[in-house]
Length: 310
Image (cartoon, rainbow, N blue to C red):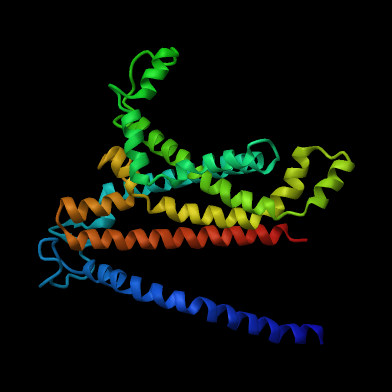
């Protein structure tokens, strides 16, 4: 009987939830449906940027994969596309992992009571508040191999023997992009984790302190399971944002193959090569890759949360 009584209540709450999000969902549909549909359509045409899609002929899957004269063409057989996919996955995986770990550490520090905590919390958010293009340009000057302050400091400390080309070297350029993204976005992760920490009941920690349980064990057994839902949400948001990264990479390294992401590749095809068809096909693939990774991350997060439930 109790279960039967809860079923109508659950159904009513679901209807109320849909009623609340329906207006915003409708607005998003109106704003995003036409550009997305137009992009998908142009991906099946030979449209050029000069013609803006006017008079474009339908070519089917040729922008994705086609064979002419025994040779394959299209985005899916372009080695640079697959390299950009790999660069994007490496960037997203490494940066989000570092930001999650550092964000939790920063949140734990900011959660403690100490003099000037409000000022510290405000100052920590400064990197995240700076527009990405501005912070990327600032770091581009700081990482310059000739007059950048980073090389100057490292040379003065004797850590390097000669200036390093941070944004030109094939290996250091990816490291630089990841470190700049970690510097900028770690406050976002810390803010979400801190909000979850502020909601935790304090009596649990009082009982653990009375029992003499080590703080590390309290974090692993108590804090981490309780903040896992917020952590999953933060990781999902950051993963989606990292997979579509464009401005940070483009400002720091432009079209460098060592750091080219999927969005930078789509921009190159559309703007530099003036091919609206190929660029739209690449942009469509970016959406598909992001959607696939989002489903995988959400599924893995739900599975972990289900295992953690008693």
